[in-house]
Amino acid sequence: MNYGALIFLGVFVTLVSSWCGLVLAPHFQLGRQEPVEIKETGLLYPPARPGLAAQGREVYVANGCAYCHSQQVRQTGTELGVQLKGWGSGTNEVIDAIVKAQSKPDPSAALVVMTNNAVGVVRAVRPDLDGAAALALLEQAPKPLLEKVSLSEASVALRKFDKSGLEVVLAPIKPLGPDIERGWGRRRSVAQDYLRDRPLQLGSQRIGPDLTNFGARQTNALAVLKHLVEPQSVVPGSVMPPYRFLFDKRKLLSGQTPAEGAVLESEGGVDFEYVPRAEAHALTAYLLSLRAEEILPETPMSKPPVAEVAAAPSPDATAK
Image (tube, rainbow, N blue to C red):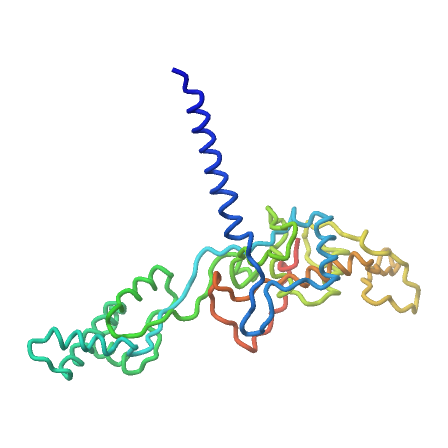
């Protein structure tokens, strides 16, 4: 028998279903995303880059910076806690259920039963507490119940409080991972971060550090320009090539005032200044604009302290 048509139909269905799953479905999920409003500031995220920074992105792409730098912070896990807030809105329902289950309805006795049950639930989550300590925790609520636990552990704890009459909530969330420990970002990168980027510059290697949040680590434009002129003078052992073609090299005469933003170098006892061209200024503006630390629904985490100030970059934070 001739099965050619059936085989063709099977191959066609397989290819179409694969295309729908790998291309069409992600397009509908992510392709229609739009900037979101941050409630605290009323601003849209991600913001449109200023004109100079937008030009600098073209310089970044043209010079192949993505071959050595990535722009994607990776996260391996989440650390969070569980807070006991006290008796919740379902307390009355719990008491009613206990009263109905009693042979001789007694609301006061039901309250005692509910309290004992709540103490038992607290001890089930915190086996290190005795009855008196668990009761004291209830009376002093809101109080931390669990700290530095995984999402799965927190979920198990929350389920144990169902129908207990107690209100428990997830405490501040802390993302975990090597990239976050290096200071490359406070959270993982998500699709929302790249809505303004065409084409994407995710990068595939990390010969240099990740640049997703470079602007949060470095705020000094002159330091960036100096790094472009002579990377090894900033970070000994850096393998980054100098980008002096983005500057005009001029001999600096005795008593002459250097140009604004110029990087000074001495060669053989002669002083030179590297005056940044428009491309160097644009690239610097783009690098300083890189920041993706807004708290989004898909990246829950605790808010930084109001007075938190970005730490000065370590040598390897700007190395390549």
